[in-house]
Image 1 (cartoon, rainbow, N blue to C red):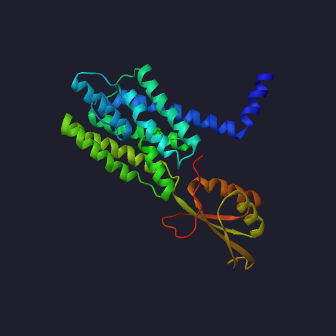
Image 2: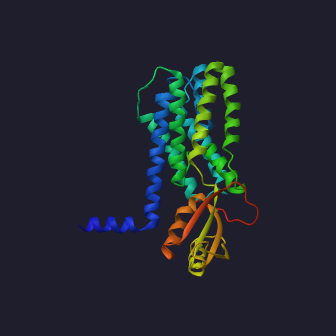
Image 3: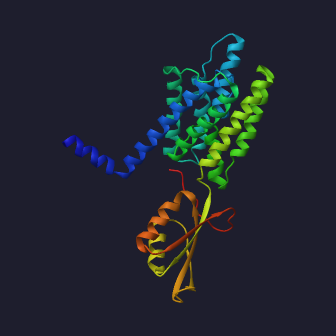
Length: 296
């Protein structure tokens, strides 16, 4: 009973629970990456993108030259210096958990042995690209990453507030050009398609830097503004309006925030005024002062 109570207190600790959730995300992500490499990438003779692709290419080149340099070793060698450099802009916690992801990916590649599913290369490309993209999304949603180009992409995004996944895809194409020149252009072409599916999957499911606009119609403007500004680092404006049906005086609140903060904002507003009308609109461009959500 005492152990259960201690476990419950640990779960109630928000920081401990957040760290536990992140750890689960990075381990699951690492297992999925190892699975994709063994089930889809290697059997189809593909090359994944990013630093994983570089590590796999180093492994193939080493085999061609007659010696062994496992991809799991390459992953560690490449990620460590880049991660340490990007840690200046990305938090220490984020960097540590990303390194944990890389380490577990290397361990799973060595310890696990998954068997291929398909005999068709195109199926390996589509399913493998989607699944490995989701592995990155899982790590990112846990406030970590799969390392490699994720470090670089988030480093730049954290500096500029812009997503650069399309540029990551272009960088991967350069890698595939080298791969194609050495190991065949057909494999390189399939690998580019694999990377495209992966990149689009990440762009579709990871929206950290997307912004939304909230328009709130309420009769409790002061209470909502106080609760909102106390919980979120964004400004909120207020205008007096007249209800078209009731003809009563009401208030229209307006604020811009990140897509990740939307649920928290809605919860705060509805707690103060359950009758508030909230309209959520996607914001494609925003000019002016804006506090970006930090990576913790």
